[in-house]
Length: 532
Image (cartoon, rainbow, N blue to C red; front, side, top):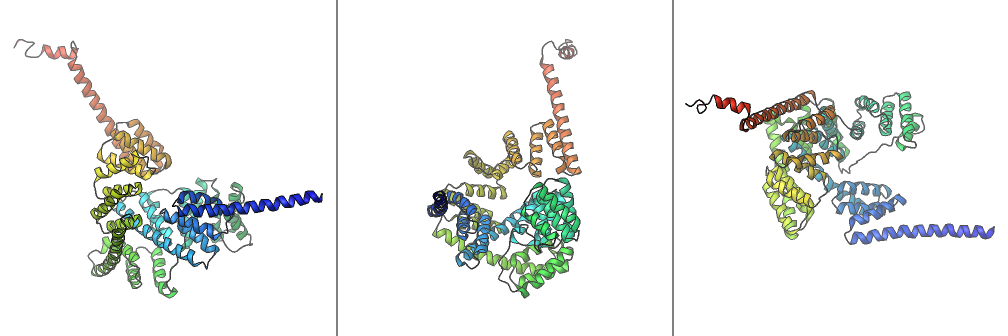
């Protein structure tokens, strides 16, 4: 018996030793792959490593480095944040986090401007408002995020995932009463979504409806036992804990003394309650300017632009903001140009430079830099960026050419396929390909309203009226009554024109057939037939 025990203990410690050696090898191999620039393979190893070592700051930090070097700043930031929570005093991780956050936030602000340009072209596309809201959410600018999500919800119905994001924003802004009816509606619409039931439980609890809250948490756990967010909520309702744990997707490191942001925060909150108060918005802009929060001041001015573009106060503030904004951008552009002169293959500098130039509506210059880079490096991501800039610059043919090159190389990017489908539709060419690409995109994003509208338009051009009608019928909940009426009118007109064309063609064919009664009748009454 003692021999068996000894053997068991020996085997147990051998197993532990092997496991530790294996984990150490995962880490060493991932470092070697990182040194070789094989970041995707390194991420696969690090995924396995952090799954077994969730308290390893090194694992999360290394994975963050891989994501950052691949340009995936969002995932890099999340990994660095996890690492810094494990080791709050680690200077290297802290520097990595700050660097990745700065890069990510710059990209987010530029994405916001891009979506605003899209809105200026076509304000009816709900997706653009949603994307701006998501950007502000990732930036931790909760008041702005709520404004844009509200605009999105006026134009479209949210998915369950988007409702979870929206209610996280409402919780951050302490707008609990506003969120409760939304969640009530969504748990009725999606009764088997444990996440919605759990979130609904928190909102009910914060409103003092503890009995209903407890039932909501219990329902969530019936669907998904051991769901931590719901378990914590149930403990909270029953007086066992005093915190909640649903995912806070962002936090920001702002080196600004509390007293300096007090008025700004106060104005933001006041505007949330009273968004029509232009006086408050002007005060907010003046306060933002004091602390060089230029981009935020610019965004607030954009809101006032239509109403106050001729107002003296607006003109003075706008001039100051635009001047400072351009000075900041010009300095960065000069630095990025120098970087590219020193290293023409510096992809990150190129992308940032192109974005800033487009920011200043210098699309021709941005296109030139992207083309020069492509002459040195056949990079699919840069080619796709170039195709988008050509589109923004109204050069549909060049945009189409580059997108066709990408798709010919099996470039796996649904957005590129969607963009090409839209261009084919706009140019009224390759309509069968456009139809195929719209349908392919919708197989992955079945409720994308803009793509569904594009598919209907293509089917109308192809005279597939029954198919257009079927798509509209299947997705009618996504469209307003006016939009449905407009589509139905197009289908009816198209069908009439098509049938009218067939009738005319039939008459012409009959007229050309020898011995046809209609032909003979015309012959009897013609001058030749009567001998005249």
